[in-house]
Amino acid sequence: MAGLACVAGCSGRKSSLLLERQARGPIEEEPSVAQAAVWRLTPESQIKTDGNIEVTVRFASAQYLTDLFSNKALFGGYAGRNPFYPEHLVFYIKVANRSQQKIRLAPGEFTLIDDRGNQYSTIGADYVTAFGESRRPVAATTRGLLESASPGYFGISVPVGKFVAQKPQGQFALLQQSALQSGYLYPGVMYDGLIAFWNPPAGQRTLRLLITNVKTDFDANDLPRVSLEFPFEFSAATQ
Image: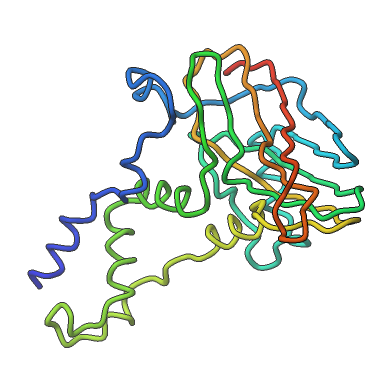
């Protein structure tokens, strides 16, 4: 059973995703980034239009996310707990392409900027899931490791799969199904989803969200001639 002890002892390791710097800005700011906070952003929702492309941005509060993810009509059997954490700042984005040309979204390039000189990139399901795993009790993490390993790996003959809990997939499914993904939007298409960032340090007065690098006016070689940016500014406070 020495192998089991090793697993339990090694379970405190963080994913390499969580070891990255969480903002582009002064390194002295890094310790105050991604701390738990309850935000209040105003206005709560904004709409901007450029070239018949309409972008709606809404601050997704904890209550908004709780109501969204508990909706069984939307998520069926995966409906349940909000998969985000108080360390995340989340926005709902809706893009309506009312132009006569296709456009391309790249949510991975959307940017949040705080008033202390920090810039944030969006974080995807892998980052949120890794953060959630780091918050789980050691025993639960050990069960997850055992589940995916065969008994022979640990040198024991008992059927490990029969006494360990199944690793939950609901959180990852909710993140994947609600996320705003990159890709083309053709004329007449409306597409929506969520994007998330690590929390800026508390005490911000303004936050700017840039829905940037929206490509359009593609040439015969499918290269874009136009790149649009939709800036949104929010007054910010933490509770």
